[in-house]
Length: 314
Image 1 (cartoon, rainbow, N blue to C red):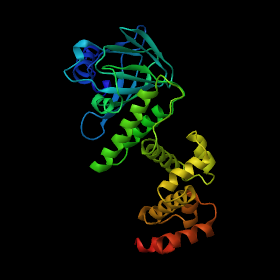
Image 2: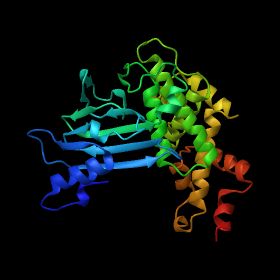
Image 3: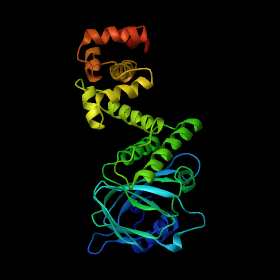
Image 4: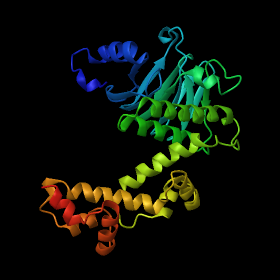
């Protein structure tokens, strides 16, 4: 959904009615003395039910969820983060969310987001019922600013973004991924008032974290200097913890990196559009800095030399 799709004379009111009240279930308007309202929102369902990931870019604006917007049974919980921070106004007063901070809030509560600086906002939506089953005594409409030291909010948001943007998963895998997200958010609810609370254990943390580590490795796979220490620092864990995550999959960091580089090189060699390129150039572009080592590893992996793969592609 984008405000750029509408250019009529009554654009502001049309945006409030169509995009705000009808689709997003909020009243929206530009902040005082700000530029005219402009936004782009992408909503990506995470399988069956109401679980979803949303990402928006917007000018400074108010987003008010009022009692009139609350339908019967609309009590989903949202984990939200904003690029530049915001103020959340509710009956209990104003709650300040710092830049990059996280808040848990409910569709069953009237509240208003005031984004004075605009920017990017991301939200993960989950059904309250799935969280109430994991959090005894969960209130009807939570509104909680999460402690800055909690690693789970960024982990859950990153994993939701990865699921939403990646290739479609099978129904069983997507169901499993939603369970991991539910367990992560339930852990936040249980520990949001306790900075020292223990994080969720097992797959709820390990599976999302490994998926995000693998994503970041693939994004840097062409860098010959890519290292275990670099990836560990990026994710604020130790190299030993990274290796433990890969060991769960029966592999290790160096083997994963090597195999990913080999797959990248094989795809390039089999691409007719790249037949004019030297094999050495493809090896270097795939992150290898030793051509002899690349050739040996390639043959062990695929049972063919790089030149044979290129020849077989016609």
